[in-house]
Length: 595
Image (tube, rainbow, N blue to C red; front, side):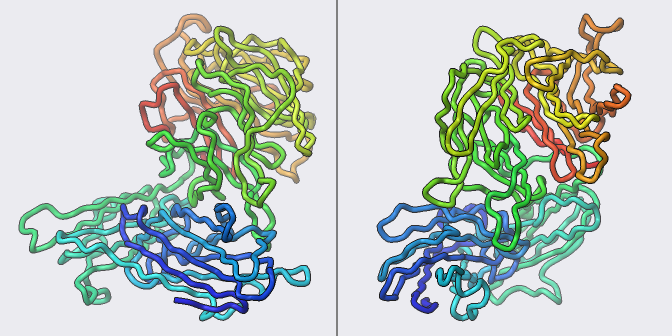
């Protein structure tokens, strides 16, 4: 079909097969031709509906979609996410606009997505704006619906056997038990009845008086719930034609985030690195807000960048290919960019000195990973710590076979494209170490301090348990007050800061936590190892120089007493703790503390 918007002729075609496993063949192609007699500076916004209706293209706004655009004769570019809500999602070409010559065409492609929604005509909203008198016109949403909406037919694959084409739940993580609604949806063919169970309790059947079968014999259904605990849903389909065979079954679950520790697996894989940074794609009407960005590694060992406004749900895939050999490198958010420094955290034979940055591309308004040129003789290393303090990026310690390191380097960034390394100390007061925990926080005297804890003298050796601090990077002091009660040898530990609230008095300072799993000492104190592993969160109280211990009992992923690299960030009122191991032999998860 074709629609007209002023000087632009818009056409759309598509092939969409609903159901799981059909993402590779799904594609929508939209062409927008400039039919004017002159070049126009254009900006295009594409929107689709989300939910459990025939008009919806996607079941939820977080469904992965490959979205690109290209002007005739130019290189294809990734479309930037524009906005999303529970029932809609949109993308936009460059906010600065694209020069489109007379007769030239912009081609937009949405591909590689699953459409787990009922068959019917999905609506695709296309709005073209031009830059006139220093404003974009017409304003979004003011064009008549019939002049901006294309439709794409969605069909289910015809199968001889009874089939549950999809069974979805949205959202699959909720923050408030018993308060947040979740909606389940399904579409099935060839069944006489379908039954939904919640934690093994039957809650609904289809077809029923309110929801009979469709004319073609298929069954589409929805169910809304407000789970108060982590809940497993089971959908069973039965067919008389199948005789006494077992019913076809599909399972879905909702993780309820409740006070205390929550252990979650995320569909995009396990986290190698998490950053807290301002949203890279704010809308015109909304100021940038912080998001949790994460490099996640999937089951095929491929790394990609995702972000979430909450840290537990609605993860969106961000544009730009993560440098795969840097996916496990230490890094931080700094100057509204994401940085990866040097070699891996878990591969002693893979030291490096490269610097990669996730930033705004110079030729478009799309973020991508770029390898940076940095002056200075920064030595290769792996397993180092990266923090930001006093306006600079710090690198502490690490390992370059056969020796652990005890030096400190700072990255100078003039924000004009010039980067340089400066060695602050060739030999800090603490012993050389690999994979130390480090944090920067504001103490009770309103001064910035950098603390470093633990790590190990060499790969796979016993953990160190000394704690050091500095205010300038050159002068280090060992903590004179011992950690009591003594947690033992750290098998994995991290330092993390809860920033103080802006309205708090200056003498409150940040909250500093030491979190980890520890192997107890044998009777008699430090010396021989014991045989009991415990996990604890300890909070530092700077006014009276004592540690407060909070044992971790339930919800925390246990790590079987092996050395591993642990990190943590605070975001959205939660603590996020994760870890890596040299050989990933289990599904690693995010540990989330809700206070």
